[in-house]
Amino acid sequence: QVQLVESGGGLVQPGGSLRLSCAASGIIFSISAMGWYRQAPGKQRVLVAAITSGFKTNYPDFVKGRFTISRDNAKKTVYLQMNSLNPEDTAMYYCNLRLNGVDYWGQGTQVTVSS
Image 1 (cartoon, rainbow, N blue to C red):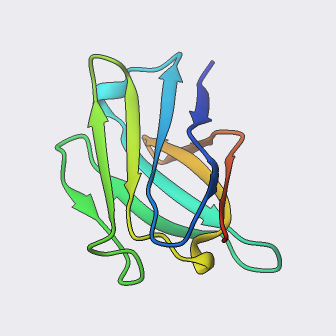
Image 2 (cartoon, one colour):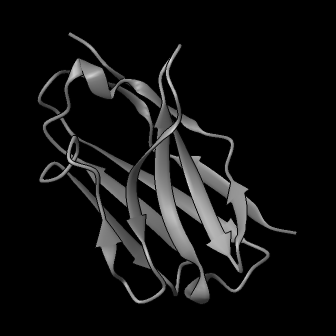
């Protein structure tokens, strides 16, 4: 049974930073591809960062240079460091694990950027 638990969301002012964490259990984490997605009200869920089992990263243009994804295989945890946040980053952020073509999701953590 795979379980993903996100944490680290909250309220932050524009220009501020947050670090999200996602702890995995019930799976061989080190061979899994991991990602972070976000979904704002009325919008589609979109990828914000991904990292392979070989530590190769991928980012869409709207977060590139601001967000950094990393993983700690010993802790079975993936992180998302978010800098220079703006109100358009406000969304529910979800952790994703992909293994052998199967996707697993966490429950989400809310990020709100507002003054």
